[in-house]
Image 1 (cartoon, rainbow, N blue to C red):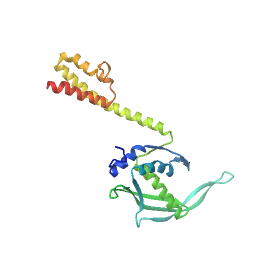
Image 2 (cartoon, one colour):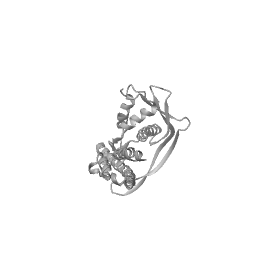
Image 3 (cartoon, one colour):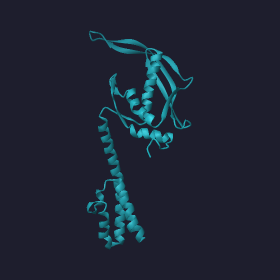
Image 4 (tube, helix red, strand yellow):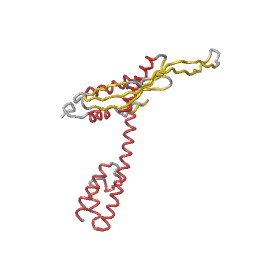
Length: 235
C-alpha cells in the first residue's frame, strides 16, 4: 500500500515530514552571521505538506499586538577614523500568535501551537513583516527539530550516524554484560556444556567471541535465543 493510500492521522503525517526534513544547509549571510532563508525552508517542507495533505495557518492573537518606539545609539566612525555615537530611532512590533496544522483529509484534526513575533525596523509595517518572516522561519525549524549547518548536509548526516552507532554500541555492551553473567552462571551449573554454548554463540559472532558484538539488535537476539535454548529448557 502506498503512502498516498494510507490513512494517517495528523500526528503521523507531521512525523513523516520530520523524518524527511532533518537538516538544511545555511544559505544566506548578513549582519555577521549565516542563516537559512525562509524560501529554502519552505521549498523543502512544502513539498511534503502537499504530499501528506497538510495546511499551516498563522494567526495573530487579537489584542496582543504592540507597536513601540525603540531608540538606541549606533557607534559610527568618521573618515578620519574617529568614533562617535549616533541616535537611531526605530519601531518595535510584537504580538502573540498561533500556528495551526490542519489535516486537509480530516479538517477536524488540528494541532495548535502558541508562538510569538518580534520585529524591529524603521517603520511599523516593515517591523511587522520582518517579525512575521522571522517567526515563520524559526517556527518551522524548531517544530520539526531541523538542524541547520554550515557544512554539507551529507557531512552532518555522517556525524549523526556516527553518534547513533556509538549510542547503539553502548546499548549492545550493556546487553552483552547481562549475557556474560547469564552464561557464566549457566556454565557454573553445567560445566560440560561449554563447547555446546560456544558453538551456539558462534552462530551469531565469529569464534563465539560475544564481546565483539557492537549492534544492540544482534546482542538482544543472542540473549533472547540463549534464554530460550538453555535457560528455559533447563529450568
